[in-house]
Image (cartoon, rainbow, N blue to C red; front, side, top):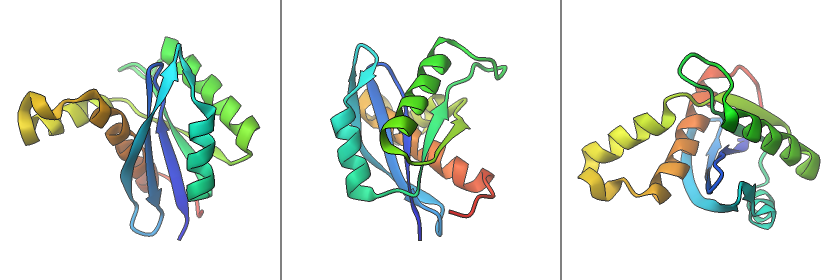
Amino acid sequence: MSLVIAFDFGTKKIGVAVGQNITKTARILPSIPAIQGFPNWEFIQKILIQWKPKCIVIGLPLDNQGEIQKITKKTQMFSIIMKKKFHIPIYLHDERFTTTSIKCNLFQEGGFKKLKKNNVDSLCAVLILESWFYQTNLYI
């Protein structure tokens, strides 16, 4: 069994999930605060030390047509820094519509009370990771 960590990069919060390749399932971890678009690298390092993932999956935010947008470039920079800092293989995965999908599911489960932003970030990371598991043919 190999563990994988996923990040849903944002300029205020970064969603985090951990999953494993056998069941192709993931679960949320606490989101990481970002200040002015910069993550707390110590939090990230603690997560990586604790879980020892084989690789990292980062959601790549493209617009509806699959084009690069402003946040895409920031996410790409985040992935480059992650690779340089932690020397763990990084995979970018198309995350289009994950936030919309999660918000719809949460609303159906409990209305507006369920739509707390804290839930959304890491739940998006779960969806990104589970989608990546099913779309990749990598053996990790």
